[in-house]
Length: 197
Image (cartoon, rainbow, N blue to C red):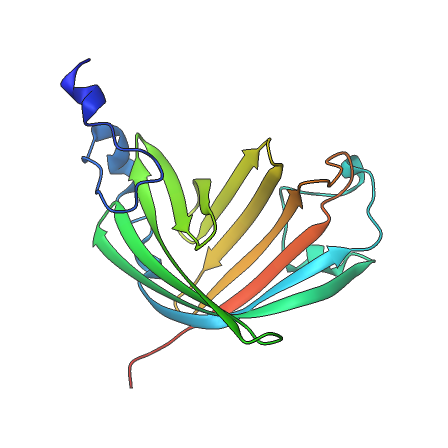
């Protein structure tokens, strides 16, 4: 076994900053715009009138995607996210989710990182580790997705970040959902940057 294999950092490792490989350099500071504290609501919708998948746009999604007939809001979460870049390729995040209905509070830790020439978002929740692979669209938009088979977890999120607002639009299929239909769950969030007084 070569030393490079022994030094291989697992994608879900949120503590070790990967070596700065040449293939990572084009991504320098891609997460920097997120540094700071953000607060807002994350809304979850259930599609009561699912259509065949080919009848709905699933990649080029925007706020208007949430105007689809049959979407019903089923939950809202008050969220605080604190992002801190430790290098141009490695950014830590602490996410605090508060469920107003139950008063339940969940704190998760994670990272956005560039590793092996790829963008990754890894969040360690109390009950699971979530790994999304990313792509950048211009300077202000990141697409995050995962496609896991067992149990089924297919997700697609578009994050649009401006100086003061951070918007998330996305959808997901989970265990028991029919992936031949439009997604059962849709998500929307708008977070506002918190400025120090």
